[in-house]
Image 1 (cartoon, rainbow, N blue to C red):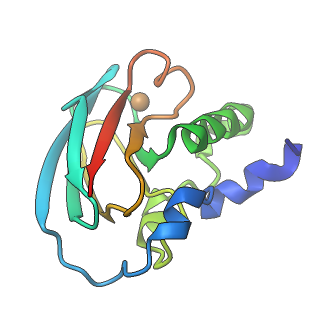
Image 2: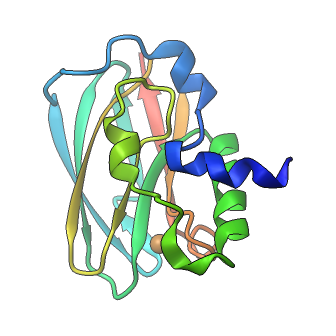
Length: 158
Ligand SMILES: [Cu+2]
């Protein structure tokens, strides 16, 4: 991996599986809202079942004392993201413009939807589940958090 790839994180890492399958993102209004809690070091709920093509609005409340993020992607993309976060750790804890917000709202499904949530805050993220993918993960890739248990599995049903 090239050491310069962390730069790409601002636009976040293309989750190829999503890019290939998501065509009609955009203006869909959510089919349902899922309320999430993030804290040290877990998410509640710890797993999700979502219908392929369903548009979900996540409301993620950070009830912990540390900043957490909520990123959706396949296992390989999550791992890649973690590696980049680790490389960036030296560069002050800025997340390199990790305004997941921009990523999440970009109209192409090619990016990994992500939000960062400050302690005590609630963030929202809208996402349309791709078709043709059976399993994704959500994870907090702030160094050490995933390893401590901040991840969950999304099972997608066609
Ligand atoms: Cu975290």
